[in-house]
Picture (cartoon, rainbow, N blue to C red):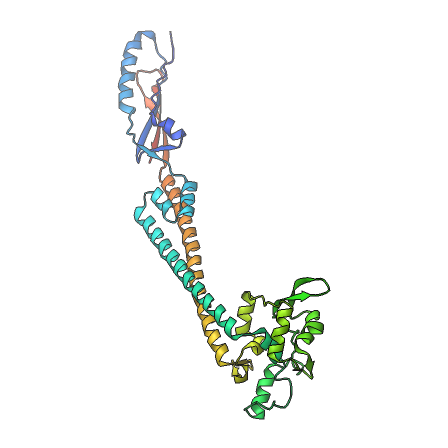
Amino acid sequence: MKFGLISITLSLFICSMVLGNISSIETNFTYSLLAVNQDTTLEAEQNTVFEDSISIVSKSNISNVKNKAPGKAMLYSAVLPGLGQVYMGKWKRGLIYLALEGIAAGVWYQNNILAEERKIDYESYAAKHWHFAHWIHDYYKWHSETPHDNFSGTLDDWNSIRAVFLNNTGDYSEIRSHTHNVKFSWYEEEEGKVRIVSSSSAKFKETIFNELCDPINYICANDIDAINGIMIDKSVDVKEDHDFYEGIQKYDSYFAGWEDNDLVEVTDKGDNDKNVTSPIQREYQSIYTDYNDIKKIAGAGTKFMLINRFVSMIDGLFLAKKWNADKIVNFNLDLYPDLRNKLGVGGVKLTMEWK
């Protein structure tokens, strides 16, 4: 009677491999299949040979090492830079990312505090020295081609100042013609409510400015005290937002609001780019510039944190992929010789090597 005998030797780590647990640095898995086709009289002897063969070819050296999930490494680094590297067992590498994050966070935090302090400084300075009533009263101060009586400079000085306020056609720029404008509240008697009005609106030019200034040949008949009185009656409150604080130190259209505008000077920035300035305005510019510089440093800290986080995430991803790629599987299929078998083959040897 002839029959086939099948012997399978499996290493237990296969189950863990399917579940995602990768076995050791070097693991041999041997699958031995012996197909024996012989007389029953040789069965005992064949069994002996088969058992000896199994003891020779079936061997394993197993230790459990878990696979690393790239998604986890990225997620951990997204939460806290360096955490993905710690997950991968790279402690020193992780601490470097964490230290860089801490330094950048410190730069951002400290400079934000300093910037807020400088913001309070420039806001309070502007409240003391830039006035809406001055701006209304003095906007057309340099409109005339001849200097006014209390001007202490020469005609050339006057023309140099006046030229700054001329538009491309050579005319004096209208108070409402600027892209950068002043927004303020204004009580509408007809409606019985307060509205926000822009100095670039037609209503400002046609009614509000005339009511505040009462101009005669571009000269306000109302003095500054009278203008302040009207402002109280009309619930005027200037909207002091970021654009306002930036504009009063940057654009000539706001210059008349500075209380020392009589001390006007012309500065040349080159390429025929000239601006008017005064001692008080320059001091304000200095405070505002400090604020901007500090905010830029704080912003650099924020950008560095984002870059550090991104690099840590990508680094964690590649570390995990490299970890998993190092676990290479090699398959070897060999015939198992047995001369006592009629075909000379006792079985098949399948070796899976996991590194």
